[in-house]
Structures are given as C-alpha cells and as structure tokens.
Image (cartoon, rainbow, N blue to C red; front, side, top):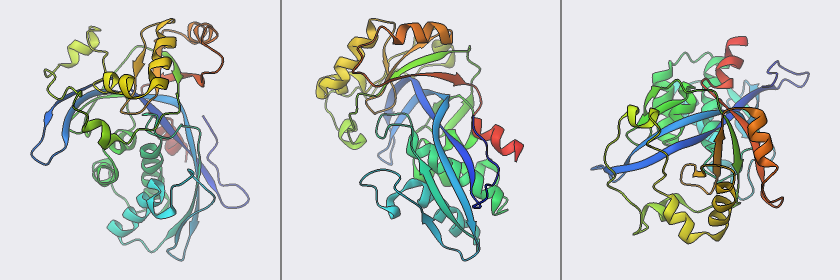
Length: 290
C-alpha cells in the first residue's frame, strides 16, 4: 500500500486503513450505560497515512493539521502516543503527521485507525514490548473502534465493539460514498427512533446473508437529507448500506471491474471511491517488513 522506510528527514510512513460495518445491530444497554453492539468490521486497503519521527526528549508533537477544528490535545493520534508513553514510562517522544484520506465523521473509522497505527508503530519503534492484548486494551480507552485496527483483521464484533473474532470473507470491492455529514454519535444514540433491542444474532446469520442492516440508518435517513440522497443513489446500483454511526454509505461488489462500472452510474456530484476489502490490515504487512 505504501513504503515505510525512514526518509532523509527521519520520517517513517505507515498505513492507517479505513473500515466498513457490513451490518450493525444494537442488542441492549449495559450497566455502564454503553450500548451493546453486534457488527462485522471489514478492513479496507485504503486509508490515511501516518508519519512518525522519533525524538529523544520525550516530547510528543503533531506536525501540521490533521483535521480542521481538532486541537492537538484532542487528536486521537497524539492521545495514543501520550497514553503509550505514560503506560510504559517511555522516555522517548515522537513527531506525528496525519495525512488524511478518510473522511471525518463518515463512519469509516479514520481517527480510530490513526490511533491504532500510532500505538502499534511506536510500540515497535520505542521497543516498549506490549502485546496486542495490552495495546487493544489501551486502544479501547481511546475509542471502541480502536481495538479492531490494533488486531488488524476483518472481524465479527460484540460488546461495545472490542470482543473480536476474525472472519474470513469472500473477496469484495466497495463503492463508498461520503455525503459530508457529521452527526455526533451521542445524538444518534439518544434518538428516540433508534432500535436498541435487536435480537442477538449469530455469525451464521451474517454468513447466510440475512444480516445487512444498520440500526442508525433509519435515524440518519430522517435527520440528514444528504444521507437519504446518497443511499437512494446507491440503491440504483445495488444493496446500499450505512457504515458505523456516520453518514458514509456503500455497496459491495464481487470484483473491481464490477465496482468501477457501477460507480460510473452514480451522480457526478457524489464523493465516491472504489476500494478493496481485505482480510488483514495493510499495517500488519508494513510492520512485518520493518
């Protein structure tokens, strides 16, 4: 997906892949107030790029802007580095650059994946020696979607998204659309129309094709005309689905040519991409080559 050698200025570059939720049900509410979910996370061979340059003075600093309006202290990539440093008492620091390709707030997992890449890479470069269980536990403190990116496999997920079982899926390509809508997740969870008590499903239900809905879809369709329009346009080329709790939508295809052909049928004003689903994160491949 991209090179990761250290360049002349001391930077190494690492992938932070996006994800799709191929279905998403809310099956109850936990005593801690969080909602219990069932979903399938499908990792994609497309995403952000993280640049890391080591420092020996313990300072952790973001170079450049990651997202408009996100302060450095709130940046998940920076928070991930600070958390790892604190938990391992590392004396090392890092400069961090986040080159964004994943639309913010679209349900594609960009911020979570950026955080996971920083955790995994700095754990290697700082030689802090944590295993994936420990890194996933740290990631969960940053966000419910971070652990799947730490572990790096397309997976069936339960709990708040952290109980993961790797899943082998047929090869697939996706036409994805970002309607540019960013609705805060707490507002969606609080919506009276949200179905919070779906029946608990089994992996077999997903494999058989009987699970493809997203609990947030009716709520977002009602609240956001741009999401309704994107889903309507995608419905002309296949089974349109919503990802996560964002506005991002997608249709699955068995091959790249089929996806490319279908994308040409969409209205030109839609922001659309064709991306490949993968079983294993490109980050794992990059770390193995390091």
